[in-house]
Length: 265
Image (cartoon, rainbow, N blue to C red; front, side):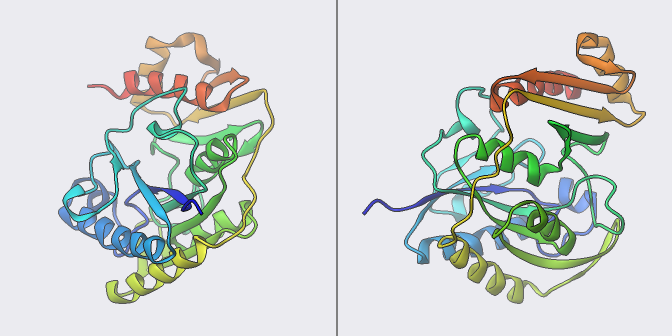
């Protein structure tokens, strides 16, 4: 029998012990805790008799230490409209490690939706954060979201969106930059057990209907001004861009190319 294979997408804001954006973005501590959580999840997947590929989705996508894992990793966040996350569709499920809530969730630690300058993201009128967007992109390919780890509110967001998803809360949010963090030894055990369970879970893919409309609202920021200057044609209102298409991955990828232009120094 063919082994099941999972894509493990990694972020840092929701990993064990991280409670500030500097920790997530510019500290060795953040990367070390990412590896701590990732190794626990990969052990669970392996002990379930399954294979994995890692996809680093945090900032520039170059945070995972490949010298410490025994599975392939996609680094650098390639934008490929015809190849989901650079690896294609031959996967039995998506795992999301180290996630967080969407922007503006009260009391949520490090809440944001990809860029902190984005006020909100809607697809087909539904308000989604990173968990929801990635679930929809996977769902378009028939791939279910099986596992989410992060703070308790990020896990709740996943559970409300995806019935049956396995979650693992490694910390309890208190404010936007504070949380009750469980000891690393404890979270390693929790993540391992949750991954083992998720590898055997039966969850339906999260699917939205084509055609797709992606609406991204900006806060009042430098990126808003810059995007208006380089791509005024995608603005629907003064602070909101709209992308439309019959294929969600292709439409999202087109916007990511614009975003890359916008964030380039």
